[in-house]
Image (cartoon, rainbow, N blue to C red):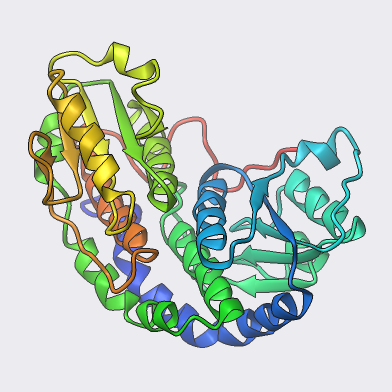
Length: 342
């Protein structure tokens, strides 16, 4: 195994990639935002799989909180397998795919456009089938990503989508926070949670938790534990974990809770403390917990950009866990960089 993984190099490249996106990606983003403002859609849908679907969960919360726009995730098989038309007049469709090549994602985007939605693609390859199938193709400017585990493309997709929403609403506070994000992300790459790495130790199962936009980060973290470490991780909203899943928690069971500086932070901490009192080894990205262990984190200039700092620190941590287990994080077994489903 090489001394430095490609995944680690790409995590360190995230701040530069985001800075590049904020400059080179702005024209296509503002054009799409102008079109969305003119349309004033009554609802929105997202189209994605895997890490890109976690980006969509994050963007759905952001759209609902910023714009009051109801969002839903539509399964690509609705179009690719079932061939079912949808009533999408007056809506916006946002498809996310780093490669832009998955046939079912492309087919659903085409169907959404046919059925009346204004279609936007967030992709690292704007000339891909997904980009050309959509009315607006936004280049996320991640650059080449060699590691199978998506890191740069996850963050740049999320930033591109958030920037789109911020320009759509013309939200100066959020736009200013996004401008300062590269520096916050750089600081986040320097945090890798040694206490979490020690707490996971030999455990082969754990929970990740979050609520609101940061629940999307919990989902992405659980996927990366599986992909890069072969650890069975399940993500739950902190509002759901006590409704059954908590019954498998025993002494020392690892739980990683993601909390941003938003209205959901107190409720996430409350659940983290409750689970810690049941004997679990609970870590939370907040300094306000009484029983769970608070871990280092970077807070940005806006609650909606906080989650992006957390996932960068998580990536730095999980890469080290993978290598400590003797697993190559760049080449997870059974996986390829581009997954093509029909």
